[in-house]
Image 1: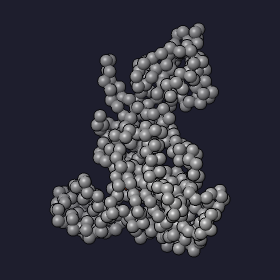
Image 2: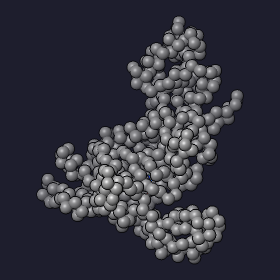
Image 3: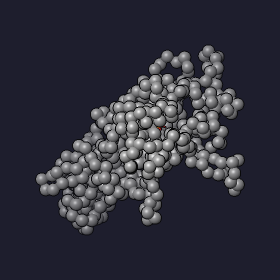
Image 4: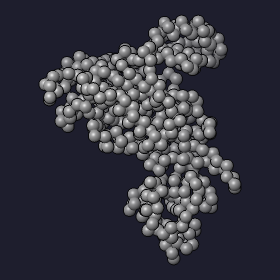
Length: 457
Ligand code: ATP
């Protein structure tokens, strides 16, 4: 089913998943806050990534590096100087656009990632691409716009105190690569992953949480010897897809793999594949997997003057490790999950909105619903059992008629509802309802654990 973004956004706002940032002050362009349910869901997603890529992967270890780093880091990485967007202004209506996006939106099969500014300008003039606002073709030449947020550290505001908010988490990993390797006595191959905030002063943020100026990334830098014969790129491409389909339930038909051609590849990369999700507003990058060679380590070695080579314990050779980087944005992944889960269903007695979230992502796994006030004590007992003893995050709802309560739990993606009814006190049984099939079954309270385990397997 093709969903409408407006409907999805309004649903997410009204249910407490996502709120407009600074809303009581009229908002701040393109900023979003995560409400109580969004925060739960986001935490679940990050935890699943961490479990899969760090805890359960035999090669990898984790890290948590700073957002503000020595500015030399960004000189070495090439962000100061190269991390900018090609902008042009419409001379007729003074609106400002990204040249590459103007072209790609008109010619959707074209990818102009590696084009020079002059090529972009020429193409726009030749094809007479018009301004999306006023429909005229009268643009300025391209100017570069730096994407890093600048601020000052300390009390003095001059060039010497300028620092930047990191535009990616990856450089924190490269900078601490040697410390992590040495202290954990790691041998190649091994990876270092981290989750954290990144900031980019994007020219064209938008499509809800797809492109924002403040976002979180989950990045892994996987280091291996240059003469290693295993195809680590394929290994990580498979791992990422394994995570997408088998851990968080993204359906294969909802994404495509796009191999960068020679023209589009960054100068340091020998191979890049983007996993692109079919969002309602178009296909967009979800997860990038890139072979970065030894570019980052060699740049940091050059700029810092520190030896970042690895001493091979078998051959006694010294060399710089090569790197495969799978990198994904938390909110973009969340948006893909929202888009895939949101359903509007017609029922015999009306309709319902369903968030078909996988069990491991759902903010609440179970909702406990007492039919009447007299059953509160028993209900709290079941709530304690599920929340504390069995460890499934659950919620408690005693307000409104039972039909409405079911609808609300469907709309926030709670996989199971447990109703405490008139007989529960005497027979110790409850009614458990499955969100997706809406089937109900009466079971004994001490069978809840095995029932849930059975359903999940
Ligand atoms: P795009 O082409 O969409 O700007 P990118 O190629 O610049 O993305 P990378 O630098 O490879 O993106 O970042 C890795 C991942 O971080 C992306 O695949 C995406 O999931 C996420 N990401 C990047 N920029 C943003 C943003 N402004 N808002 C939300 N997520 C982002």
